[in-house]
Image (cartoon, rainbow, N blue to C red):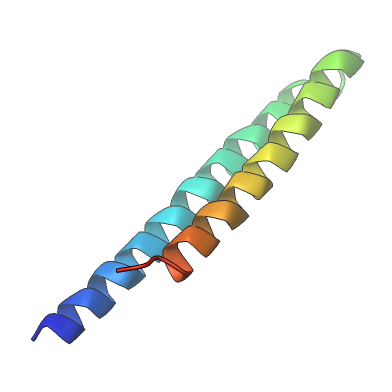
Length: 70
């Protein structure tokens, strides 16, 4: 009984991690579209850095979920 519940909780944590990471990526992509023709190069660099941090955080949290000590 506990094994199936733990599997469901594991999959739910993993799916939440992916969903939140891809939601943030989607918002950053939307900002890319907004500043595409504006000529604000500094804001594009900010978006590049935030995209890289988002990917790093997403990978970190996926590994945290996968290798969680219970």
